[in-house]
Length: 167
Image (cartoon, rainbow, N blue to C red; front, side, top):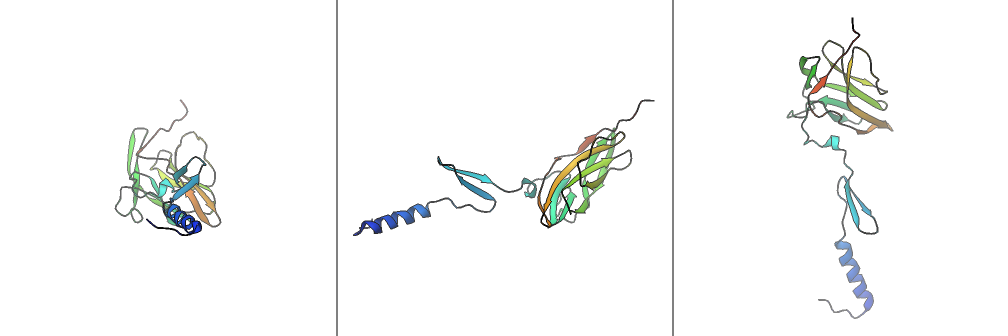
């Protein structure tokens, strides 16, 4: 225990002890003093968590590029497979991975119209269209020349149905 001659030395010592016991925000961690305590939350984008392993996983490959791949792959950035789909009782396996250069807020869909489904990017949300299956894969926000965040909308094989007019 320290013996203090001046009370200011004691205050300085206590202040240093309080500072050394304070929480320090680490990578992707946000600290908020609520007045009743400290709230700790993650500011990480869950889509950037490389531990998630599912089909049709969106990964950022550059400041303005998104690649859709199978998240279970050992090296998803070079893997050519994105996932499987079952559409109108037809199984589509080995749907090709795709990379998109993002220049505006975007939506990435798996589109099927009776032929092999493909990944496609649009700058607006897509609406229902007779004779097509549209499954949202990822929403991408773009600002100041870079991707600011993106989502994972699908977490497994895709099952879809294409309907048409009755004859």
